[in-house]
Image (cartoon, rainbow, N blue to C red; front, top):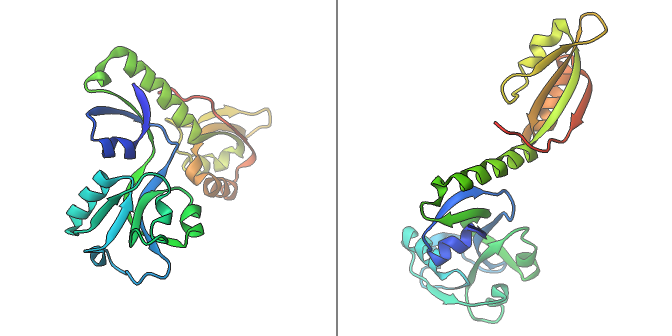
Length: 218
């Protein structure tokens, strides 16, 4: 097994099994052109020179688009090639876009998205040890994407509150010492956390406590 970026797998065209996306090292392979360049459409790359360290991926992308360009393979700082007159555009990995901006370049087209993945040799995904490992990794990834939430609510508002809670299965409801009040335990996805909390407050939730989760095992 190994951990590698999807872009490396696509560029080297190795035969491996994708075992699990890992949720980090996210970036995009983009075509970028100088800020003062007049290119406005992908078709205008016909006959242009594009510098890249990913000639295989770029070549497939241009072929799919019906574009014939001069692909110039460069190792190192691809971003400087237009300024040196070596190319009209570049194709390189972009994370924040800061490097492009500092070199007077602007993103023009998305070629592919990439992130770190766990890979193995072909057929290894069916081995017991690897299945167990993937399950453990997935439990951590699920935990990173959710928050554990405990809140108090009057019973008269319980149905409205639980309707807003997409828990692992269903929320746990525990009676409180104060009559007609209950505590609700659930998990909420990180991606819509603040919107969901706002909705819960409007539905009558109080005393909301939010905690991180270490693992979620289904």
